[in-house]
Length: 141
Image 1 (cartoon, helix red, strand yellow):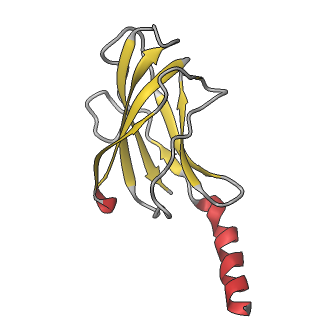
Image 2: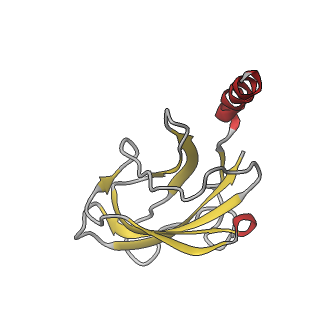
């Protein structure tokens, strides 16, 4: 029982260190930087980071630069053998910098150094807005 408690304590102490670096400054064709808006009008960028809840469930937080509706997020991560895994959102909820999206993460643990790439597709402002499709990236730290 003592070993379980010590392991849990170590886990809790190091958990806040897991996050994503901000790769949002890349050029649109830079595979490790966020691209600008595409397929619609206006520029949309996303800041992506790893967050967790009180039960230690992990989520990627997608914080848009402008109000958006997200239809799909396509994830890729070579170390996890994740290739074009699509998460579908409801297509009607408006997300903003103050109300980011938290789609489910289908993995129990994220490892430091993993590079995740995402393609976020949706509409600007509302479900009837102009379409966009942008790249966003996250390196787990």
